[in-house]
Amino acid sequence: MKTIDKYISQSVLAGILIVLFILVGLFAFFAFIDEIDDIGKQRYGLWEAIQYVVLEIPRHIYDLFPTAALLGTLLGLGILANNSELIVMRAAGISIVRIALSVLRIGLTLTILVMLIGETLAPMSGQYANNMRSIAQSTHEYQQMVFNRRYGFWARDQFDFINIRTIYPDGGFGWIVLYEFDAEQRLRAITNASKAYYQNGQWKLYDVTRTQFEPTFVTRQYLETTTWNAILKPEIIKNVVIRPQQLSSLGLYKYIEYLRQNDQRTAQYELAFWTRLNYPLISITMIFLAIPFVFGSLRSVSGGQRFLVGALIGVGFHMLNQTTNNLGLVYDINPALSAFLPPIVFLVIAIIMMRRVV
Image (cartoon, rainbow, N blue to C red; front, side, top):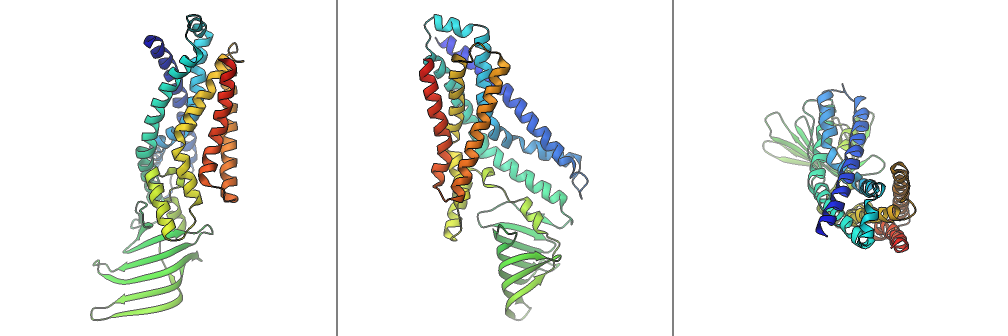
């Protein structure tokens, strides 16, 4: 029986890896096509575009694996069905449940490996890719961005450093601290502002407290508004802002705690956090959903028809998932419920279908 389990696992493994390789290759190719328009901007050349696309591959693997698991399982078991091997196994007394367990075992193993990629390699490579891309496209050699930290975003503009805690939906920034240094790296001034907007080629700061450091004394000013002329542009900062879906579970948890401590909205990040936690459920559901199709009404159809059905299932799940998530954010539904409802619905459907073919 171990030989049969191994044979089924190898067939499904090959199917999932083939589909995953094709999907990731397609997404990487389309991503490169998108980057072609940006080649030539400042120091962003062909090599930088290739680097960016390659560094995004771990994220594509993580995002596409559930779909690849569904289609790959249909492919692997479909080949066995077309070769009548599943019929021989059933005639030998091997139950559908036993075959399903063999499939789920390899599926769970792959899911764990992909989750490790999504929690470690994908966030780091994606963050590095975004920073590399924004720096290469920046308009000044002194302009640099630093990785996302727990306490906001740090940027360098010539001899000045700026810390931004909040990015508003309307394009403004909140809780700004500007550190001004001279050419000899001596601190000249610290400027605090409650918010900032980029208008007419310059920054306009609001509710400003400016502390000026002189050789023999320190002065402090309180201003309603003031301007700050800088090379740094808001679109450069937004380029390196990582979407919640690209953060690791630990990174999301820490950032949610930070937002709560500052009385800021956390729903979007909580939804992303619970979506990451239910990733194993999504992957296993997709694999489990493919099994009854092979043993049920699609057991005698071609591989192309199975693929079409699998693609339709994947699109249906994606639409339900996006709809549920968006409705949850709009109507302030519990993020955990919004994240877990779609895979649970599809898992129930898979169980019902499985009971019909067993």
